Image (cartoon, rainbow, N blue to C red; front, side, top):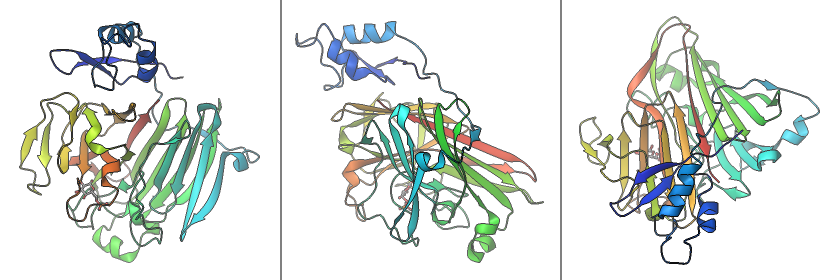
Amino acid sequence: MTSVGYRLAVVSDLNFVPIFSLSTRTRFNNCSQRGSGSCFGLRRKLGCVSCVAEGASQSMEVKSEVGWKILVTDPSDQQQLGRVSKVGNLEQITLDHAPSNQQVKVFLFGATVSSWKKNEIERFFLSQEADFSGQKPIRGGIPLCFPQFGPYGPLSQHGFARISYWRLKQMGTTQDRSANGMILCLSNQDLNPTWLSSWPFAFTAEYQIILGFDGLQTHFKVRNDGEEPFSFTFAFHNYFDVSDVSSCQIFGLEKVPFYDRRKNDEWTEQGEENLTGFQIVEPVDRVYASTPNELAIFDSSKLQIIKIKKYHLPDSTLWNPFGTNGSDPGWKGFLCLEPGAIKSPILLKSGEEWQASQIIQCE
Ligand SMILES: O=P(O)(O)OC[C@H]1O[C@@H](O)[C@H](O)[C@@H](O)[C@@H]1O
């Protein structure tokens, strides 16, 4: 079950804004100061004392049961749980979870989550130029960067996971029926010879996508099936749908050193954001190292807070091309916040397994 949590963060010496709240709008609407000029709500990015006090009084943690879930498969449920359709050359699975009013769409190509609707509202950006031929990664949703983030390694940008055909292993529901999910898998046997020659390791990767009362959960695990150790980097390349990237505030990355990939592709160029809830005002392509496990994006036009909890993923990439050459025409409408294990590659010895997860929540 989901309960509501609030955190207070100083925005300026004038006021506070509650972050990570799942019911900010309700609280703002109920505020006794509303209309009096004291409560600016979130439209002005400032909460008022009443809003904050009410939030604090309800101070409860968001309880999320994170991790790989056991799914049971009832053949009579299959039809209701998910359906397969074709988009371009690609097969897409649609999975619903009616009790929490969510729906997710996932391509077997790249195991790419391309859409997530919560309360009928789309939360992920999908480019109008997205390619569904199976020749290029799908731009939008959650492409998986594995076994290489960016160009740092022997493979092409972001590795082969996002351009490989994954297999559907299972679609099911949890024993208590509180969540529905699917598992996709990929192993070295599914790879084309070119990738195998650049990355000659035996592995099995599994990807679980879960819709439940605590939001969308994605879990990735990989096992080394060979004799030789291998190392890799990883990211959930989340493309969040936003009204306008410049009207968003990002929480959780303040005071964290970043590597500015626009200035230098090596791990040398560093900076640090001072402001809690900073905004993007120029092209940004940064890897923040060792970030907190909770991050949030507040979209002041949509009055939407997207909260991300991450596990075993120390780093986070923040990316938006901001209209620079080669930008997607829809660049204003997305913000990529990508939990990952990027700076220090993960080393897996023979027989070892590694898992990482994220939970994404919004109102
Ligand atoms: O165009 P691609 O390969 O999908 O990558 C998009 C972006 O992905 C981000 O993760 C990188 O930090 C950017 O440098 C990159 O431009």
